[in-house]
Image (cartoon, rainbow, N blue to C red; front, top):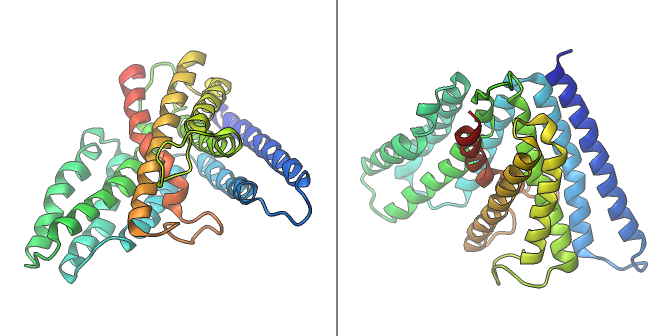
Length: 313
């Protein structure tokens, strides 16, 4: 058994330990409630923790399978997220071909480029080539009705669901001196600090949060965000042993990724409000769809990738 595999197993056990602690805290708070009283904040918190049990199991299994497992997992997540996003966008018959190209050409090619390690290509393929070519395909069909809206929404869907998400497995392509083949663990680090920071932001925001960040858009508070980011930094410090960052570097990287992710979730919330929906889909019981679960990671992934590439490769 390699040292990387041992670290993944240790990380999985630690994650389950954290989830046990979070579940215990939730059950204690639930036991203190008056009989028959329904606390929607606590219920949502417990539902999120329960969904995390499944997420940790899936990500852990993918990590143990190595590069193929991570590539398969996030390619599937991109496909599901793209489908969710495009179901809420304006479309016309003239867009059918460009949408098919997005699903069955652009998305697979992006992951092929990531899998081959062609960072110069996967960094520009969607924001440049797909950005230019797909509108041409739609324009050739001759329907100008709401053309700009249709094209812009498709491009946003590809950027969020495919381009940003693909930067999670792209972390495995980074060659960091003295880190060897352990870049796989950067995926675990990013997902854990962002998702746990997001979960703790929700908990603290409902418990002590007073100052709303965006009224009418999201219940996020500045107090909750501050506590969530600090929690993510502490988790990053505890996980520094799986990174090349060191203790303070891991805290800084975790803090930046968590903060960007939280503000990214505001953007996703704004899109949902604009479309008049609560969740992107009902694929995950009580938790919506893949975009709902990955919203913070979606925005944090490219920033985390480029900061790691700039400072550590």
